[in-house]
Length: 147
Image (tube, rainbow, N blue to C red; front, top):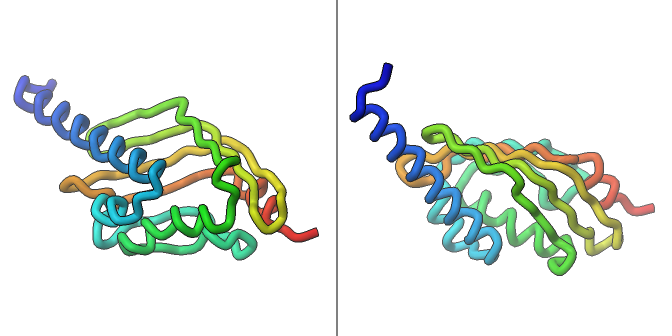
């Protein structure tokens, strides 16, 4: 059973996590790579299924590499067609999970992709140390493929 001080501490950690994730979402939406670099830890546990057919999906580990994904995504997709809707935002201590749907259009092919996603983030000392994104990678790869 938790004591009152343990419950307050757990609530404070969860509130801090929620605040950092909120800042991350705002910076991501604004394409603010400078702010994203500040929000990512120096070393990040990045997971997004590597796919050579998708130019913006590749291994990353530093704050700058993680933040650059936003720029690379914008370079290869049509910004006006990009959509990400968060349906669920769960926080448990240092961990947050966002679930929803995303869609977009690949600039080079004109093909669209869409599907559900889940994003797991971990926040430590005010910075994101884990970024694991699970998405419909087949739909994205198919949209990138030249006929």
